[in-house]
Image 1 (cartoon, helix red, strand yellow):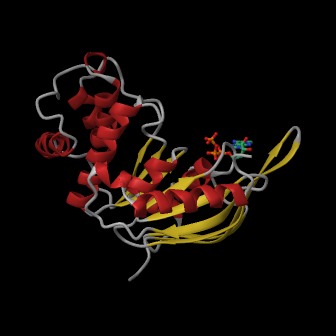
Image 2 (cartoon, rainbow, N blue to C red; image 1 turned 90 degrees about the vertical axis):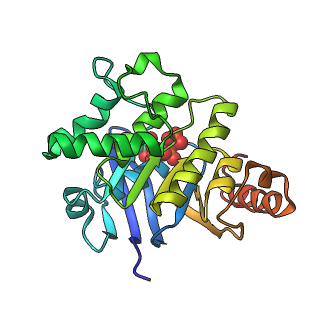
Length: 258
Ligand SMILES: Nc1ncnc2c1ncn2[C@@H]1O[C@H](COP(=O)(O)OP(=O)(O)OP(=O)(O)O)[C@@H](O)[C@H]1O
């Protein structure tokens, strides 16, 4: 299987007024097609920086990184990924359909193609019928679903998500976790997902990457034995609890939450 993302010894040091900040040090990781990979670790361990590096929004100061067999920059130009931020970031003066349409307009998709794509992604995130609404008419969870739809609209194989559900309450988050798993199964996308939540990482992932700060590095990579079909109740099973325990131990090794 050809990996979608291969990182070898990635380092990234920011130069700041207070001296160098080692945001990433010797990060090596392989992500295969269809993987759901979560990045978990305390604040400042480089989760966001690593995701941004994959997306060519940051440039590593060392190491090599390939995305779909290309440099991250070439992959960005080839629209290899969709990116979902913590805040939905929808324009209030555009309808939901108008927001999803915007990147497609910039990329030059025809009106008919845009309409068809918007219909398809609204259906994927269960927002059929909400295209003509404005963001403020939707709940926070629905707005985040709309931002996921926007990231899916140009059909990239990779979806990069930086704590997309961090600002939502637990009940909404549970539902969105279920919906995201469903979407992942339907589309077969490769997903990179940043989270602070151990249950969220364990519930969603085929692979959990535990990171630690100062310098930002990977302390453990845990492959999940859980089946891809996961009802929410799986969280009460001994397998799930054992996996959560492994993540917790990984965090402790990195002195993450001590
Ligand atoms: N543009 C920048 N300039 C200087 N330092 C930066 C920059 N971006 C990130 N950093 C620093 O790099 C380190 C890693 O930051 P990063 O945001 O990747 O961590 P994180 O694990 O995603 O944290 P959080 O969970 O709080 O989002 C931190 O110490 C941060 O202050």
